Image 1 (spheres, rainbow, N blue to C red):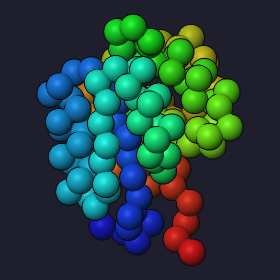
Image 2: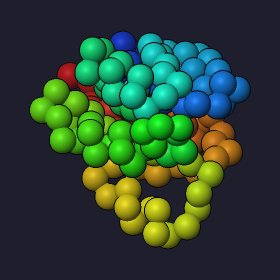
Image 3: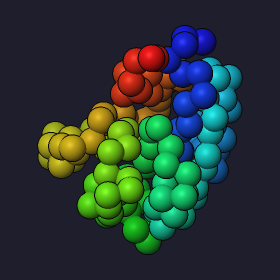
Image 4: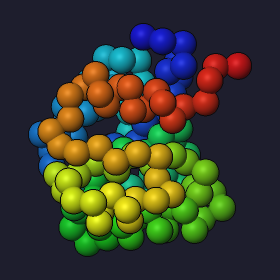
Length: 127
């Protein structure tokens, strides 16, 4: 575990319980504090309350989908600065282009090492 992750909090917003469990367990093993939400609205609430260092956000959520969640996060003074890594099974260029303003776009399935590197890449360097 690198020093860049010491104490960092990652919010995983994922409605697939298995994927949420895999991401959470893997990130936890890398030394992250992990919070989870199963819906977009719950993700917004947790982001406002906990102000995580990074948000890992599935695009295909029931109710408020990932795009709507990103719009709400970025429009808020309290959450607009949180880096968002989008996670999706979609690989098309149009969706990637819409991800502008997000810190990254990861396609499923995601290897845990690639997930770790993506999260570390958006964290500020240790002071």
